[in-house]
Length: 311
Image (tube, rainbow, N blue to C red; front, side):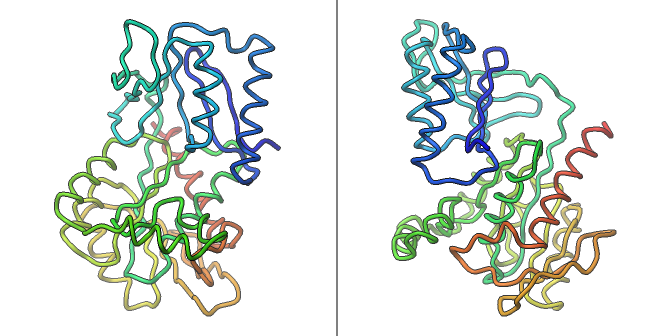
């Protein structure tokens, strides 16, 4: 199976990571080989502009820029953080064309406005393992065949970007050092900017986590979601977060107990909401195969598809 998927739809190159997990060197080789194959078969004819839509790592972007820059006069990448309802926003990153300047913003009406946007906030007090759980859920969704497109983001200034877990698995000391450098204060200004980002993201499934306390800043960011997952260490932690979610009209779709000392996951119920236990959310560990993580991934896919069909 491929580590990276590439398909041309009109003038939009749809890209994304495949279900096969791999390191960057393997992925960029696959990307280069796939692009060469598409060029040889005439699937990438070249022209004035090509737009790229999908998840692109820094390494992959270099390969795409090199290969496509020889065929197209201008390249624009989707920026999911500045989208609008029904509209995708692309930013021109490479241009030799007089009609496009680097930094230009292109508004593109989405082909299907029937796509539902499932915006899920992962909330809970500190030290429940939200970052680890979020990253495991991200990988679990990628492993579901034909799952709707998903996007994950951190909603707190704690330095735990999507890169953290992968780096921690290979070099814990480096991960800790980088996190300390990236860590920022949780200010009202940060919360407003993060809420704006959440508002603009239009992917069918969007998941973000927030800081581990109930605050005005977190309330502002959470208000842009429509569904929530509550991660707790014990029963007493549920009520404060559930009350906050209900005050923001967020639908609680799962309550997950984080059992760090446990040896296995347990699904307690799947209706009307998913309830269960997830064990050992250890930073740097891949938890995508955990029973509860996979159950939530399937739930998100089902909700996303149901909302589309229900419109």
